[in-house]
Image (cartoon, rainbow, N blue to C red; front, side, top):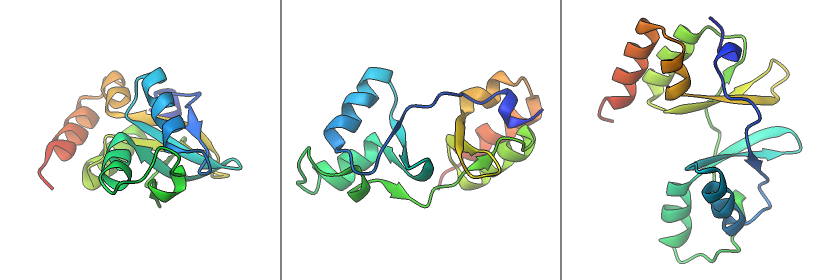
Length: 137
């Protein structure tokens, strides 16, 4: 089974020049703790609620702080045509709960999460990813 068969499509993103107030509002609206940051159709980072708390609020930055100043750049990703088992093993190795999914032209096409892997009904993939993500750092 391929990632494009189980991934979540139509992922809500934010631009790096938008501010963290806008990001937090989007997170609240769609009930998520992470947004992918896209700049002119290119994935440039990820912003999590933890990034906002640690890199903005804890450092005394205001709500108008641009996303690019607190986001996590250089994030891991997978390709839509990769095998679910392979991606599950990678997620376990790097201990992440979600990965952006790109096409081979490196355009964002979706996101794959632990929930998507679980829904794939692959006992092997489920076991690998859950054990890896739960492992202490």
